Amino acid sequence: MIGTLIITLAGPHHRRGFQAAQMARLGLNHVFLDAVTPGDMVNHDLDRLRHAWARPMRDVELALTESHRKAWQHVVDTDSPHLILEDDAVLTDETTSVLAGLDAMTGCCFVNLETFRKPKLLGRASRMVAGSRSDLVRLYNDRGGAAAYVVWPSAARALLRSTQSVLPPADAATNLVPGVSRHQLVPACAVQAMHLPGAQTEIASLAASFVSGAEKPGYVSRLGWLRCKLRRLAISTRLLGRKLWALPVARARDPGLGTLPPAAGQAER
Image 1 (cartoon, rainbow, N blue to C red):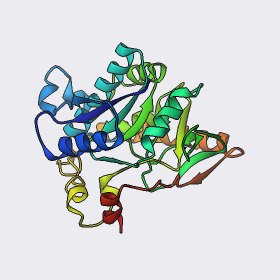
Image 2 (cartoon, rainbow, N blue to C red; image 1 turned 180 degrees about the horizontal axis):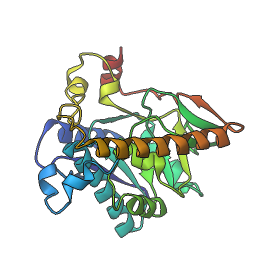
Image 3 (cartoon, one colour; image 1 turned 30 degrees about the vertical axis):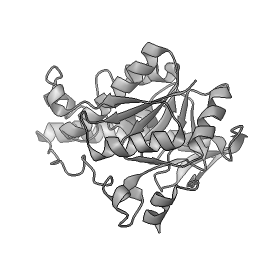
């Protein structure tokens, strides 16, 4: 059975309350996973980690990726697949049947349930997710978002290995992890609140980004700038190769989004 882990700050707050209500609506058993904060990372080499990626990283970004690593470790420790949610993820009513269908499928190790409202490089072939109105397609390249995905132990181990010495943004980590076959749900059954424009109070209050509000660090030196740019070039080259390889069997498209519950739908209108 696929469990549910929700990454959220410790203590009572609005996002935790929203997710508790959402889980009750969907009938999903869940565990709140206390998010890692920059203050929790005193044993990490933050000075090095800030500049180990293709651009300088905010401490809050490093902490968020470490929170996902905490979730991946839980998946490995329990040896069972889990839906990993960030606490601003809004889910459709189809989510429960999607999870049941995925649990019965073979050959899955990572499935993105989210739309980022941008085209993704998706395979043309599809498999129906039993008991739902959604299909599963191969995900060759994502365009952002790590707020709602199902990860199996094999992929969780690969993600932990690939982030041992560098903490990229969580969505980059899941997009670039080597040796993992990834899939996308079409239409998606999850979207981050920041992609639901409108003044509906409950949803709008979730949309503030903790990451974008933090100060962006600069490069420590010209050599540091060059190292980051070379890493960026290597990543871009790798992604270009992936796109060219997938060209005969994939195309760029927005996976779309299923029907949101009324409150979220009001926000979207």
